[in-house]
Amino acid sequence: MTSSGTVLVVNSGSSSIKYQLVDPVLGDAVASGLVERIGEETGAIRHTFGDVKVERDEPVPDHGAGLRAVLALFGEVGPHLEDANVIAVGHRVVQGGDQFSGPVLVDADVVRKIDELSPLAPLHNPPNLAGIRVARELLPDVPHVAVFDTAFFHTLPDAAATYAIDRDVAREHKVRRYGAHGTSHHFVSRETARVLGRRVEDVNQIVLHLGNGASASAIRGGVAVDTSMGLTPLEGLVMGTRSGDIDPAVLIHLQRNAGLSVDDVDDLLNRRSGLKGLAGENDLRNVHALADDGNADARLALDVYAHRLKKYIGAYHAVLGRLDAITFTAGVGENDDIVRAMACAGLEALGIAVDPHRNAGRKKEPTIISPDWTSTVVLVVPTNEELAIARQAVEVAEAAGLPGTSDESDPAPASAGHA
Image 1 (cartoon, rainbow, N blue to C red):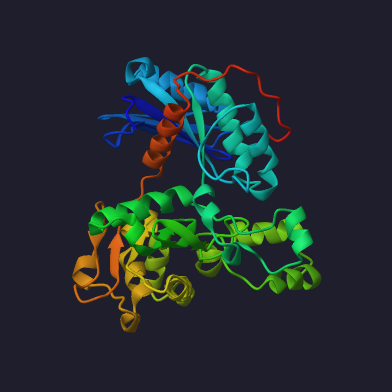
Image 2: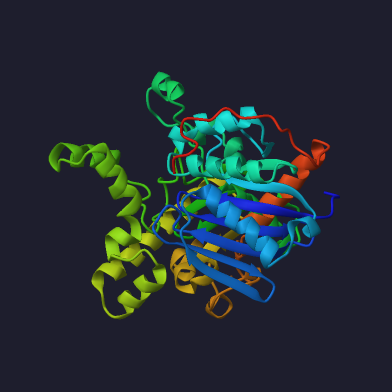
């Protein structure tokens, strides 16, 4: 990566737009912001540039209006995008399916394929695509690059990626393990190797990305060989509102005996399960407070959460054979020392332990939290998905000999405007 300049990173959700203006060489966020409650009666816009923070509550009817407001704030508050030398726009896209094994320059064909993959990520790909379309319209003179959450897991061996269902059904409907949070797992695995002073090719590691959404990965020599999320981001660990792993017969039972529809089950597993379903709260800080006050449901929620983590650590230790490092990252992983300790408790026989003093408190910098005697180093490494997206966007733009992008018109995909 040789270009100097900045990258505008856009993460367009169903009712929000997160963005950062990133210096991909220095790794700094020059400016950042958030547009929330898109389509509601009153939206919220937050923009930060240096010491200046602007907060506005006003209607944001759609993603187009949201991005126009963002660009206006860059002009009003700073930095002016012309002065910032924006050399690319990087877009987070959740589902790349079997079509995309890495970041790609956005053109009409890429837009079409992202839309076709929407059934595999109906809550994510349509708003991701809406952000791409609007940003290309508003910023037509810079290259736009799509960076896929699933791309890092394109290397999964067939034994890890394949579900044991009828093979013809699976092939026809593209049912396999795709994973998610891949940009974070890729970034953190390389940062872990750097902290250890080793080449990533020489490190076998487990990365635990723990936020409201949560996922685990087994990475051998820098290459992902297993991950907890599956066809969708629902499988795997216990999350804020998602169940994670569950006996599929539970769904059949609820449809037959509780009268739940497919949409009801979808809502139950994605929005009313996990910590929310067990404790009534999806924020772990609130769950801890309830548990400290003697709430038995909250205590059980923490135990279930940690038990699932521990199962995946053990399983991925077996998959990797030799385990050099376990890394916690993302909002919970970086800030919750209780969860980190619970996940590793009782694993001393496997050479895994957490030092209470080293583990204490939030970690804003890469930190080793295991005692010196362990064979597996346990770390906290803050993730930076925006920086990872920015750097990948620059690499793609440079490889294509850009700046500049095509001005071809895209056909309007049927789902592009639906979040």
